[in-house]
Amino acid sequence: MPQSPHPAGKFPVTSGAGIEIKETYGPDDIADFDPARDLGKPGEFPFTRGPYQGMYRERVWTRRFQVGFGSPRESNERIKYLVDNGANGFVITIDLPTSYGFDSDDPIAQGEVGVTGVAISTLEDMEVLYDGFSPDALSYALSIRPPVSAVTLAMLAAVAEKKGVAFDKVIGTQQNDPFYQMSGGPLQTITQFFPLEGTLRLCADNIEFISTRMPRLNWMVTNGYNLRETGVNAIQDGAFTLGHAFNVFQMAQERGLDVNIFARRASFFLSASIDFFEEIAKFRAMRRIYAHTMKDIFGATNPECWRMRFSVQSAGNTLTTQQPEVNIVRAGVEALAAALGGAQSIHLCSYDEGHGLPTEASSRIALRTQQVVAYETGITRTVDPLAGSYFIENLTTQMEQAIRAKLAEIDALGGMFAAIRRGWLEEEINQARYQYQRDIDSGRRPLVGVNIFQVPQSEELPVAIHKIRADEWGAARGEYLRQWRQQRDHGKWSEAMAHIERAWRAGENMVPVLTHAVKNGVTMGECHKAMRAAQNWTIGGGGTL
Image (cartoon, rainbow, N blue to C red):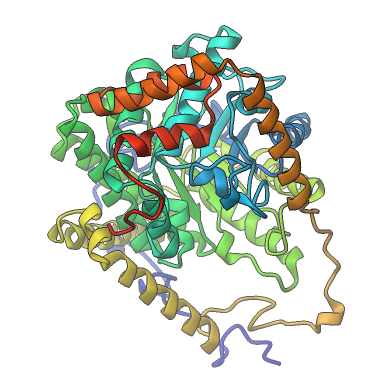
């Protein structure tokens, strides 16, 4: 049983993405570094040192948690528990049927209701998620994609109206990434249920509605986290994420939207992996590239539109099922990297996620880990404490150059949308996965508890597993929806369904139309059914990109 972190007894001399790491760094390593040009001040172009002047001295990052299982009521109860323990932001994860636009009682949903997230079928479901909270006070980020995100945005608008909250006061984040899953079966599955061009249209509808009606609500342009979870390295992560965002911005401009307005609330969801300094350098380099691109290429004159803001989650693909308590350490290191990299919001994976949904106890440990980093370590006392480090500035520059080179490769293919359609991205991801596994198998990449420092299975500490009650949840949701449909006003429902089809064919922005629909009893699945009908699209009717 090997106890060395490397077969030769030495640590790897390259970063996770393959950048060579020298033994020591000095002035010669930043000879071309210009602090005024490459650093600036925090909150000022090119935002290398952070998007805001005071950063955590003025406001500690949002301690966000991923929540979602079973029914909206059970998820709401978990949110209340976490709020009582100091959490102040939440990623609402939805179950598989909801994520593809199906109600909980659809035959396709059998066995999947509430398993990987919360089921959302009706406006009342969204109201229950906000029970005890107001959309202008508690920040929810809905982990979802178009076309479903157009319906959840409509539900949020309806909840705000019912609670008397003006649209311009609503906070939180609506994920609006049309290629939420950029590879494999999940990407193809999306287009089996809804046409890609319709998805892109709803993405633009959401951008237009949020930027003009809900100016405090973030719209998440790219879910870089799920992209990173496919196995790509930090350089690919930065390039694919930014390349995708820039394609979405081009689409918004083609819609006639003003970059100085819609880009103000664009945000990103990124991963912090375990290679500590590389991740910090990645975040700093991405901000610099984003600032220059928005100013020089997109012609944005509003400084708010040069500022890249992002939420970070600790990496799920670094968690191990072996010795799972060690994942607490991994998440802590990744939280520190996210904070030193300047994240606006941080969410830590719970140590037991390799075994199942987080329990209350494991969620509390993840929250306490963030609180230790924020309130005990002292890293919040000054902004960008690593600035000027020979190593960090050299690595940031190398990351910037490598990401730009990969972006140029994407541009040569016609942009990220074209790269996805052509299968180029799929090939890049598969090669990265293969290389990662080879590195694990060979020992080049040490993984504590897996290829080094193992213990016999009999010595593993027991892990409490969150109980999944899929059959019970599915039956309860089926009865709930039966009663919902029975009690609604069928005349108003019928008119709302017809309105969806008319509005789609007329080219209207669909968010106000869907808001009217959900207020009149139309369910998530029925909204999608009406939009599919307007496009003459049947389930399984396509699937090609």
